[in-house]
Structure formats: structure tokens, C-alpha cells
Image 1 (spheres, rainbow over the protein chains, first blue to last red):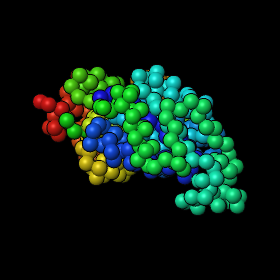
Image 2: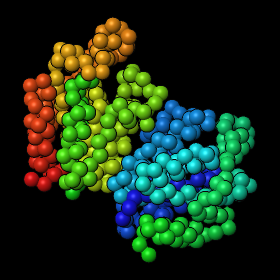
Image 3: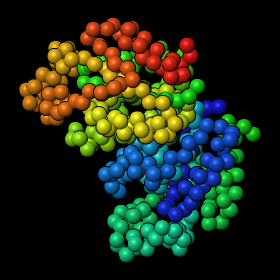
Image 4: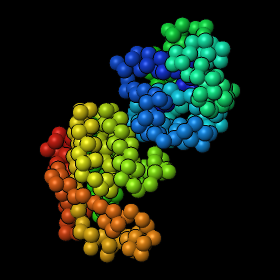
Length: 178
Length: 178
């Protein structure tokens, strides 16, 4: 089965990692799969990078480089990373496609008010208090995908429903068997 | 066939990349293989890092993280990187082994006088002129492996002979079929 990249973009707290982990667990018995989580990857690949536009771009380009290496060997790679800039994501799509790997952009969408209310890690409270500079959605931009391959609304849809729609898109692209 | 890591260490100009490319070409028809070259990887994963001990260690730990991800999916990963510190290489071996991936340290050995004479990239001349600080072998240490899995002497052995001995070690470890 061919490799590919599923790029989950969205605000902190939107549910990217949760969805990625659920998909990885579901797909692991079916095909080679790897989940790269933005937070984990920062530890291993991008320690020392900050949250300027340039550093954010460097970070996601590193993740995408690793994802392409894995995709080349038939792995479906799930990436959960805020990746706030639309043209950077477009560039990642181009690089992936040029390398022959399908690229699905999944917009993990929850309104800012929802993620602020959830505030699972307490980061929004701290960002609003000015304790975290360049925090996406508060003091740094998030550019929603104008035409994502899949958009899930984690404030209105169940996790199972979000999963099912991504799985359908993967099936349609020949990345999992029907 | 299981994944694994073949770590080629040695001075700049010793022949690591040449050997890695030859092995990759030879093995590609036989099994999943990926060659990660220190110079290339620096561009993608480690731009901004320098040549202090800490930065060198960060660089090789990043390469090794990527190598382990690939090995997890059955890829034999050839890494060509100076990786001058013996205890760092030992740590990489431990991390790989703990993750269940065989790790072969290959000492690509040519005497300093030989690589200075070859000076394929003109770097030794510049380093000796003081134009490149922290250059391994000139102004920065290289710690030879005390007990590498394979040692090849690129100043005395042909490329084919060096290759053959590494292939024999891979066969002995079950990483390629006899």
C-alpha cells in the first residue's frame, strides 16, 4: 500500500493529537502507520527553535522531511502540528506531491472560544495573561485552510464521526482498503 | 526483514558517503534501505547548529531519531556522519538497541595523513589555515571506536572489499539474506 501524509492542522487544544492517536490505533493493524506529534517532535528535532514565523516554518519543514522519508517506505504518516501558516502548508503539500506521496490536509477545527474554554493544558489562560508570547490564536495568527481535504468540527462532531470522515478520505485516496 | 541502523563514523574524507552510497545502491533491490548523509541531514534537520560538542551531539541524536523511526518500519538505515565522540555513539547504540533495532558501528578508517592528502573538498587545507574552527582531526577531536562492529581501512582496501566486509556483517546479523 502506498505511503502518504495526513497533515492535521488547527489551534492548540482543537483535538489534533487525540484524533491522530485514535487514527493511529485504528490503522495500525491495517497498514504501516506512524504518528508524529508536533510537541514530541519539537523535543527531538527542534529543541532551541522558538515561535517566530521562521522558527515555526523550520519546525514543520523538519517534520515534513521526516514524514516524506517514512512515506517513501510505504508508511502513512499522521502529523499533528498547529502549522498556522497557509502558504507553508501549501508548500509542504507541493513537496510531498513532488516526491510522489499523497498529502491530505485535515483542518481540525474548533472555534477559538471553544479551545479557550477547554484549555486542557492551561496554556490559553497563561497566554491571555501575557505569560506566553506568540501564542497561536491569542497573540499569533492562525490561518485556516481555504480548501482542506477534510474539515472536522471537534466542537460539534464526536471523535468517532471525525475519525470516520478522515478514514473515508483515506479510502477514497487508496491509502486504506475499503 | 527487520530494520536496523548501520552507523558509519570516521574523519571527513575517509569515504563514509561513498561507501554508504555504494551499499545503498547494492542493497536497494534486496531490501528496504535508506541512506542518511550527515551533510544533507544538516541542511534539513540541523540548520543553525554549529560544531561545538553540544551541537554535534544534537545533530547526531536527530539523525538517530529519524533512523529509529525508519528502522521501526523495517528499513535498514545507513548513516554517514563524522560523529566524533565515542560515548555519544555508544549512547546511540543503546537507544537503538533499546528500541529493538540492531545497530552496527562501522569505523571508516583512513589515517589523518591520508585524508589530508586526499582533501577532496579542500576543507583540510582551509582548516589548517585556520579558516574553519572546530574541524575534526585538525582543531577538534576524533575518538576512534574502541570496538567497532566492522572496521574498514579505506586507504588500504578497495571499495569493493570494504563493501564486502560490511555486507558480511549485515548477513551475520540477519539484516540481509545470505
